[in-house]
Length: 81
Image (cartoon, rainbow, N blue to C red; front, side):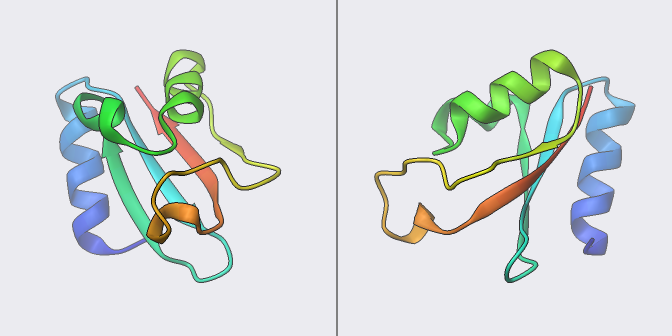
């Protein structure tokens, strides 16, 4: 995990706000999705589910996306609340 993602995740945890780290397991690319930003995310439904449950998980297939750039294989979801 990149240091800037870890720092941002820890800041969300310290503020008791939910956040999810989404990782493309093929490329290793990661991004942090804060609870306040979930509504605009192409993986909105999956991220909301993981935030509600407070558990990590994986997608078994790519989620449908409207953007060609976002049609990548985002799979690993790590939720924190």
